[in-house]
Structures are given as structure tokens and as C-alpha cells.
Length: 572
Ligand code: SRM
Ligand code: SF4
Image (cartoon, rainbow, N blue to C red; front, side, top):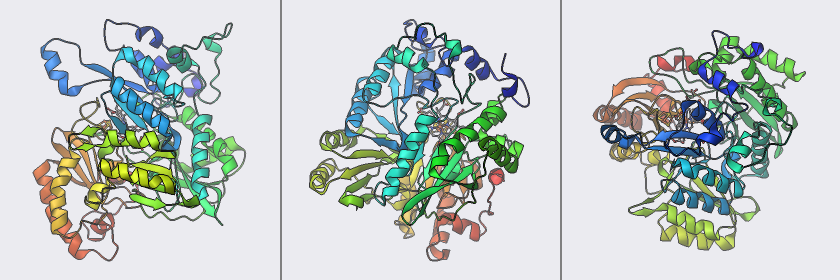
């Protein structure tokens, strides 16, 4: 029986709730099915649990039809996602990820929109070895997916002030504090023995309980003026507040999220709303209590209505704040002023505090691979071999080679040049401000291409951009292969959501600083129509824009898109 207090508000528990309940704290029969050699896949119930261990069973969709014709099972393989708060990896960890991708994966690494690594194409029989090697490098994949708190993001910029490293520490603390306590991961993947006399039913998940959360939960911390983590897209967004060069605390924003389903207006992207302020030593407790509210009141019946944003809207923002303050036993402070000026990355070398250098590399679509004429993966491997600083994965799918001494900078520069690794300066600013989700061929939910197609579309848009003198104009452009919003399309000044192969809904009007959603502009259009629209819009913008006016603001001022401050209007 599902615990009464956790019952979904409007219906019987979903199948996933039943699976979690039966799973004995995320164990299920994963240990056994991973040993089975009859199929390269695993049963659906175990796959649902697998997510909590950072992995999904997928199949190569490029091969799906052919294998079906040949009456073969799909080309099953696993995607594996690492938990890496703040996106910081040490050079030896980079080398391990690179090696694992070559040895067990598809030879590439995906730098995700939540500042971590994903590997694709891992076969079932290599999963345990892969996870063990990741663990040996002092990383893990616990809670990287699933109905728990996910990888905690924070502004990746390591150069502006000491505050950035302090905030990074908070992202680590939050991530560790909010981890599930079950030993399932250690037993299944790391061969940890169960402690004798401790039946798993007694295992304590003091925060999550045996059913975990109704849905995934995401936290990001932004350090103004950079909103690179898109703090308003998070279930819980924290805005670092700095006074007299000291971190005095965080503004707390709740209820953001990007996903929706085509044709279901009860689903929508939403920007998080700021509800108050807490000091650094209060932040773990604030996050914990917010999570328990979602645990207790989130919809456990219909998963597509289960995200915290819907809980907040259903209960009402003030009710949630009251409940939070009841649970805390104290009230949040008044939110403090802050200013964001962008949600993208800045590129190239910059010298920061303590004289250290940092190079932001443009990684198109976040894909690290050796391409025919661009040996990105090899180049980064060679850099990792000599680098003594760190790597920082950004929420825009780029990479910072961080904390380089002046002595090492010359050597790293030589390697950057040797391999032609680029800050993207020879591309348009629009390309440098682009993001695309994985989509085909690995994502089972993709309705259209994204990562493989956006660069091709941008090649064509760049012609229009150049003709109109907009080459250096940073216009954020984001594409997702379905409405789930993994590349935070709703916060791109130009956004595309896949509808069907070659067809997209086009959105315009998000704010350059990530504080306002876009709105639908055209539905179900293909490449030629997209380009035709931009052939009108971009010249108008070039001629009519005010000084310093961003494209997203312009389309609203020009009446092309109606202003919205509310995610509910996303569909209009
Ligand atoms: Fe995502 C599901 C990839 C960031 C919203 N996402 C998926 C899955 C696992 C597909 C699936 O469920 O079968 C995708 C795997 C594709 C593949 O082959 O790798 C996938 N999501 C990604 C990544 C890799 C996109 C990328 O190109 O970088 C990002 C990994 C982040 C990470 O490291 O943890 C990724 N996903 C996001 C974001 C952006 C963010 O978190 O900042 C969002 C929107 C924010 C949000 O959650 O509201 C996002 N992904 C979703 C959703 C819709 C969730 C919803 O409730 O609205 C799904 C579908 C689901 O959960 O059922 C989804
Ligand atoms: Fe897959 Fe859709 Fe996410 Fe893209 S947005 S990775 S297509 S789930």
C-alpha cells in the first residue's frame, strides 16, 4: 500500500509509484537482470529504477527500422549520466571519462545542459565496469536521473571573485545533502555487501521516504550578473546575493520548469518565482523542506502533472510559502535586489582572481568527439594530460579549461592552436549562443532532430545574419527534439521544439537574461518556412532595434510577440 499521506491528490498512484514501492529502495531485480545475457535490454520495471542510478536503457533509433525488418531486438544500449555538482571535473577525471567513452561508449562525450557528462552506447555487459571506473575516479552517477534531486548546477565562471568558489562549495553540499541514502547503488554496481542483520526494509530515507519524489527535482545557483544556469528554469533556483564582496545568502525562487506536452494546455514551461531570502547556513534546510513539500503534495497519479511547478500552481504560491515557513519554524527574509545581464557564456581567455587563466571553449551542441576535420576529443585529451587546473562544464554545453597558471597557459595555448580548438570567434555570435538537446538517434522521446540539425540550420541562418550586419549580435537560439525542453528552448530568444521529422514549432521573445519565457510564433514549420520568417524578422531587427536592444525584447516592442511574464501564456 502506498502511504496515505503521500497519496496522489487526484487519483490512484501511477505505475512508477508502485514500482518504486516494490523496489526495496531502488534495488528491484537490477542486480540479477544486469547479469542476464539473453537480451541486451532490461525489463521496463527495472529500467524505471535504473534512472535513479543515473542511466537509461535506449536503442539506436537510426537502426530501429532495419533491425525490426530483420526481426532483431532493438539495438539496446545504455546512456549514463554523471553526478558532478557545479560541473567541475579534475583533469584525471576528464581522462577517465574520455577513456570510458572510447572503451565502452560510442567514442563521444556529451556535455549536458546541466553541467555534466553523458555517455551513450554502453552495452549492458559493460555497465558495471563503467560505473566502477567512474567511481574509482571519485565521481558517481547516483541520482543523476530519477525521482530525486538531480545534479546541482552553479555558475561555472571561476574567475570573477572568491564568491564563485564559495557558491560552488554550496552546490556540492546541496548535492551531497540531498542524495538518497539507500545503499542500492553500492550493492548493485560496486559489490558492496549488505550489512548483516539489516534488512533493506529498515533502510532509512529520512527525507525521501520509500517512494522518493513524485518526479525529478532540479536545483541551480546563479551568481549575478550571470544567469548561465537559467536559474528561473529550476524547481528551486538560488540567486547568490553578494554584499561588500561577501556571500550573504541566496534569494530563493521556486516552481520553474521547461517541459510540456504538445496539445495539453495543462502542461507548460514556467519561470520560477522569487519567494524570499535565506542565509548560506539556512540553505540546506530550505532546500530539504521544499523537497519534502513536493514529496508530500506532488501529484503521484499522473506523472506529466507531477513536477513541482504544478504543485506550486495547484496549491498556490502563498500556501507553499506558508507551508515552507511552518516546516522551517522561521520565515524567509525579504528578497534582495539583484541584476542579471545574460544567460549565455563568454568565450576565450580571461584572467581571474589569483592571476589564474581560464579559457572557455565553444563546444557546439556539447558534443565532444573527433570530427573529420576537427579533433576536439583528442585535443582535449592532450590538454587534460598536462593540465593542472580543472575543467568546468557550463550549463550552455560549453567547457572552461579553468585555473591555468601563467606558466601553463603557453603550453595549453599551443595545444589549442595545434588542434584548432576554438572559442568560436570565427562563428557568428548567434551560433555561439546556440544550444541543442541530444534528440536523435539516442533519445527515445525525440520527435525531430536537434543536436545533429541545429548546426546545419545555423549555417543557413548565418547567411541572413551576415547580410544584415548581425554577425556579432548575441541572439540566443535553442532547439529541442520534443517539448520536454532539455535545451531550455523556452528561454531562448529564438526557440524551436520538434513536432515531427523536419517540423518545428517556433517561439520568440524570451529575455536575454533568462527571466522571461518565449511565446509561440509559428507552428509546425519546416526549414524553408523558418528561413523565410527569419528573412523578414532579422532585417527588421537590424533596422529598427534601439541601441543595445536584444532580439527577444525587440520582437515584443515591435508587437511581433505579445509580452508575457507568466509561463501559463506560453501556448498563446
Ligand atoms: Fe532532459 C528526458 C536529455 C536536461 C527536461 N532528457 C530526457 C531523456 C532522459 C529522455 C528520456 O526520458 O527517455 C533525454 C536523454 C537523451 C539522450 O539520448 O541522452 C534527456 N536532458 C537531456 C540532456 C542530456 C540534454 C542535453 O542535450 O544536454 C540534459 C541532461 C541534463 C543533466 O545532465 O542532468 C537534459 N531535461 C533537461 C533540462 C534542462 C535543465 O534541467 O536545465 C530539462 C528542462 C528543465 C526541466 O526539467 O523542466 C529537461 N528531460 C526533460 C523532460 C521533461 C520533464 C518535465 O517534467 O517537464 C524529460 C521527459 C521526462 O522526464 O519524462 C526529459
Ligand atoms: Fe529528448 Fe526531448 Fe529531451 Fe530532446 S528535449 S533530449 S528530444 S526528451
